[in-house]
Image 1: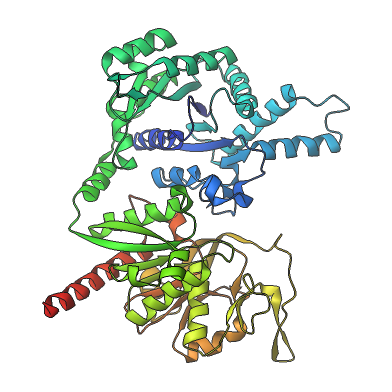
Image 2 (image 1 turned 90 degrees about the vertical axis):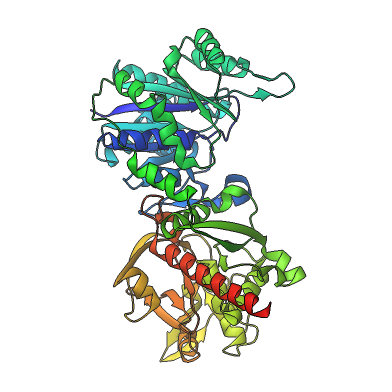
Length: 551
């Protein structure tokens, strides 16, 4: 029987429930337990796929093609099991399911209400998530939002009811809350935590553990006060202070006995924790042999918009012995001020994205990298715009573009698949506006890789990565690209669509249609990002030699 740990949050959002849940899961996994993590999001959107990166951050994509909350990326980076559609659900999905049942008459004419129909559906989704993960020993369930929010109330009521079904020894409640430090008073204040736990107890949930988020360690006398006013044992009040890397959090929690407390509550007696792999990650992170500077040419300045990508670069630094300094550069800044700001960079990365804004700046970055042999990695849109740049400036296809940005472009080198077709051997372009719905390519695909290419050197005979895009490289132009020197080193099976494109004349110039950042992890890294950072280090050395000769 799967046992459950419910993680709630209080006072303010963005305290790090996802990191806390993932860190605890990592410790439990190191103790030999089979774990999974489920995220419940209180927004009414069916999924975050249509939400703005400025508001929500990145959309994480699972192997089975689900567009999910970015916390699922943290889950995969901290534990071994892969996340799937069943690991994330929203209020929108719950209501959608209930309404479908009501339309089919499954409620036999009863009045459909939040209690019991919505709360029962939530419980069914929780069980479904655990079952889809193979009925693990422990399922951690993170409840999005903050205690006191109207949106979260059905989820909290559902897990309260669910805990009664489970019975003592089969569930544990962990509450993450803010303990602010007031500099003018020189004190940490526990009152917000007291009120937050009070709100939770009014709902009928009494936490077994309180995780106290702060910018510093919580003094023992403050922990004692929290224990007294929240009815939580002293050893169940855990201090979670700011760390310079999230990969220190598992050991931070373990050293305060969190996993022992949870195992005791759940009546589990697994082997001792072995966090040596995480110690190794932190050691390498803190002891780099050199530094490389990577320019990320993006358009979403919210920190979480490129969360998996930033982490993947950190992972590559861990596994190549480098401290990776990522400089975010607004693509529109390049359009306005030119590419001089790239001269001090050791590598250029152009990530994915949607919409026309900033695309010409990204094209300028791709051109600068190609012409100056600066290591270049283009991901999704970053590959497509590298193709546009190559078409314009190498193949002589003036005005080349993607139909996403200019439906009337004379050379639609990037387009929706149904915007080109082959009629009697003559390739013709169809530029009619197509519907966006139902055209997204999502999830994991396995694709053969061409021998003798850099992609083959990195991946071997096949690549298995996740996708999230609509537009593709137009096959009608691929012969021209290859004659001009661009190698298509991987194509999809069936439709023969370009997946990886590279310039062999450059030290490292690769575009990929997929999102490799989704499969990178701190313990195992990612071969593509490792190669990218190694190339950045070589470029840095060459640039330094030139500077030394000039002196």
